[in-house]
Length: 579
Ligand code: FES
Image (cartoon, rainbow, N blue to C red):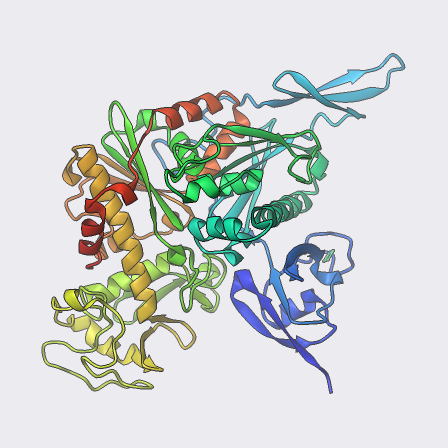
């Protein structure tokens, strides 16, 4: 009898049993996971790179040549659909309205025998010499090191073209979903920081390999990496001590722009290539927000302006005429599709938009069968549940309305007031009547093991616990906004611009932001969604070395508000738990 083993495609949230001994590529196909294999599995194209976790470590392999011998976890890269989203008016990434002046340049020369060779210069200094004419091959990598997701873009440093962008789950989620857990891990485990550093480098090498093989580019023709991330992620990337970030007085080893070589960090590109990270504002307000602020050209914004980068960390900046006030708040990974019962990244098969109309209307990425729900879909569904009264102001999934309708067609019908672990006691009194159009959706509510759920499809549901996570995330962001506005002496209605960044941010529905109270209702500002601004800032610095000075200026002049040290933060946070 054929023995089966379990294979998990973690980025796709798909797992299943497959016959032992088949290739990862065959296993992927049998489970409906789309792994690109242009040479049909002959081992020639190198386009089906995946990472597998073996004895705790990540290893990059060809899916067509690697057999599934034991239970296996596979990480596939994802093509970023809208990695660098351009917003009209102030965001110029597509048309490159800025000057290309990269750090890296090449020069073609001939020796006395007439043989050509190419010199590579790093800011005018000789980096290395290559035989032959390689002048047209000058590439760099821009890297966004999110707490949950890593995204890399391959950039042609001569033309400014972005040749491709790819993303993967940050392997450090296995050490903890938030930066504090990772800091604790580094402090508690022997070589804890070293292990995380190596995993992160391995993942960056993986993305670099994927991008270069997709474009048939040799990795040694990549001469620069610019990385942006929060302060902890940048430190782990550089293998710098992170203990001080986690304990009072919360100080990072460095807040400056750091430069190392690819060789020092074991990055598989040109050996002497400079690898640079962004300057940080503080231990908790990192290089990613500096990169984001650089990308949105703050000098052209109508102010007061509010800038959010919503990921697992929520970075917020209030931009005024004469200053920037910045902060960060712990959002949790729910908006990145992590820790949600049916959650997944915004990839193929993810429900990205939900509307309760005559029927429940779903937008699914790639138009295929829904496999899970990503952050924007989660926000939409919670907003719709709140709007229709199926979730109370206190966050409780509820079946009852003014008429006390309790008859539900469900696996285990919900009876009002029974078995509810969601919502806080003191905020469950503001129950809204059930919206007319929602009465028919009461049938989607069910209980499973005493826990409430709302069914979107046969395979995708939202649980009471998921709603609780949205509540906490929303409260963290909104409390941060309120405190920054108070610090800047700005009323919500005075804001002229709101920019929402982050891979998640790009897919958001404005109505849902107000629907769950993530933004104050009084806002009249123009709201724009700019996608991954941290990555875009890194691309810009790759293409124009002078922008490093602008980044340093932003980091050194921004004022920091450490929310954990603000006495009223907790009070505002609890108040903002209400939908
Ligand atoms: S499919 Fe081409 S190398 Fe594996």
